[in-house]
Image 1 (cartoon, rainbow, N blue to C red):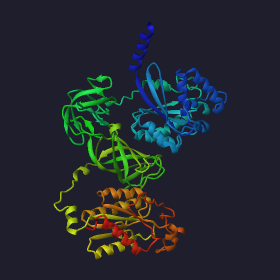
Image 2: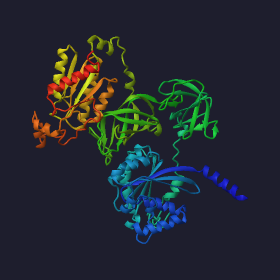
Image 3: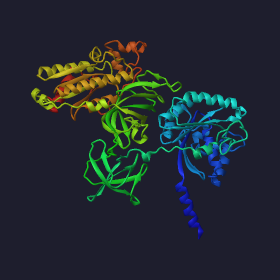
Image 4: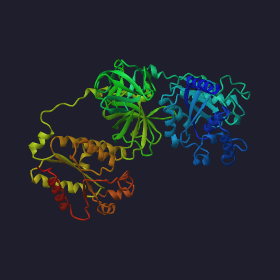
Length: 628
């Protein structure tokens, strides 16, 4: 009869405990997984069959001789066990009488830094492990810097394997001094250094007699008592709208997880982007209506007024609204093997909103060893940079330091849908709100009518020597004889003026096409038929150019000539120079060409002469109504 009451008491006690989310990070083989395994083992949270399996696996995969290899509790993948490293982020739950914990064991290998950032993004504290024999390494500094960037303000410096240096205080003090000299610039609220041996449990659960010179707390005691309250409930109200809940004509609510502050029925709210205001009438949840909701609660709000709200909007407190802009400055951790190219369009996902974005200017990269700012045009895998971001439309956001949920974002590759970067907003570039489109009485349609044609971009793309410029020039000559208004942008010609400051790196090629696309857009607005002849090797930039203009105003013309034919023609002698190493980053030799997947027109120059192809293109324009 007492069991249900005891169970209720137990559950009630668990609900009152605070939750600490923390991660372990550091370099390879510093003992992160072993430390977590030791915590799970010593807090008596393992079932008997798990213990039996651990003992069996320790004999097969273990690296600790006859002892239990605690790392195997966390290293779940076969590849991890065979290599003795952590590859993915492993999350584990454990609890003591004082607190509940969720711990993320993150990889130490540099190539998996992106996984470490994932674990840090929702953690309150970081345990940075250092092998006492190796001291502070580059990866140690990198992880400390990323933890700081991602809003972690509490650090435990765990100097592990202290037993392998004979519990030396001198070694410990030197490591701590070196780390603190580096981390002093990172704005951590608290830093606690602990000498420990995860394998033997020294200073893990309780203070050890092996280190009588150490006066600080054991690791678990510190984790149980450290105050990491982020105070999200006391911040301004934010609700990124995930879903407009409309099950019937009588109910319309706005669902999402509160990212900051608290809300009650009767409170005023504002749609951050539009400025429309209303009042909350109900807070609806799966368990019924609630009198109040706070940060972290998933709710549906109903409003007193019919307000235009959709997924991606942010509901906010009227007296403390977030910034709304289409440009901001931010830090960026690059996570892809293919480098970041400023000017290239990616997708930015912030909260529940997803919009196209490009890095308009990369201001600097960060040297993770010294925190110095370095010049650079691109970011490589695991590099951190700082720059300006230009969005296709305004979004509502807060500085990341004020709110992780409304100030953090990821970048997504538009073709592969892979996450390629993680960013933290620094501040809004308010100048973006000071520039508005000027209404003009003579518009694109009027200019096109005057010219008796439909404006369009004919975007010729293909390898060097494929015949792009030759065919584009012939098409323009034919159109000119018919009285059509045209303009030809040629790849070589624009590099004498508009783009004379650009080279031929991937980053410069992206910027080259961005500028040309913007110029072509202006010519389309003038009512012209625009012809462009550029290699334009990347699909992403050709897609960007297409999206700058309206439906039907962009025709991709793929001049499909095999590279062997182009090399045989070699009208400018470029292939020979490229093969000899005199020209770097030459498309088709040491730089890739991404052929169109669904071009509007395909021209195969080996099948006919340039004049015939030009006539065929003009006929296609006439059939589609572009020539009036």
